[in-house]
Image 1 (cartoon, rainbow, N blue to C red):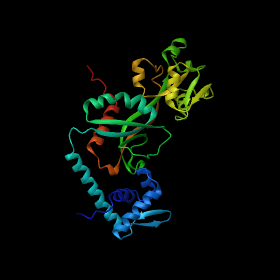
Image 2: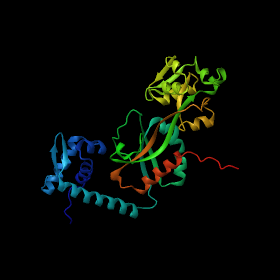
Image 3: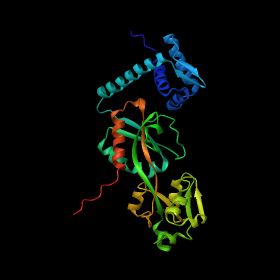
Length: 303
């Protein structure tokens, strides 16, 4: 019988050593700070060796612990690789995806049928967060967030650009029929619908359109964009909405973009994979699919 160290403690140690912080390890693993501390203490007791020392307000790994962590990380990577290689081919894999609510509702979920047709062995389970909730707590295989793909922006995750975004005016066909919008000045007198989760959307668009003097126009603000989009759909007023996220609504005729040539570029979305996930083939394949779906359509070749 092998005398193995406590495996759950090893997993916690791997994350804590990589992140240089009990607090960040607790956040990434969905544990309390005390639970992380107890697991590290159990591993230290088994080894008879201190693994972390206090530096200011943080617990940081010792030089010996860093060497140990490197070997533990490689061992976990090998376990993941051999488990995937030896797993049952027919086994269904559940992929946990965390995404902002509007992104999930208007862009991701309507496209999942295409992914499932090509990957019937993978079930994508989507959980949603509000766009103001930028933290990455809880368990997931892939998280989609608005932000830069630069490595320094997500030090504990592998970031892949998924979708660029630009805001433009959106209106329902019924409201457009009653009060057409053919030029920027035609929006004057319309009720402007905004969202707390997208502050500044109207101010930025009005400035882009040369209508900054309408910044004080009558408006109604909802707490989330998906409610604003529904209010636009119901003809309550006009909104500023993101393309290509709303392409499906525009293609179906539910929404119109009468001034689509006036757009405000926004920070796009990235897909985030935890670095300690080891680049599992199912996860990396899903991220590659997301990037392909979000890539701009190629312009037609000249005839």
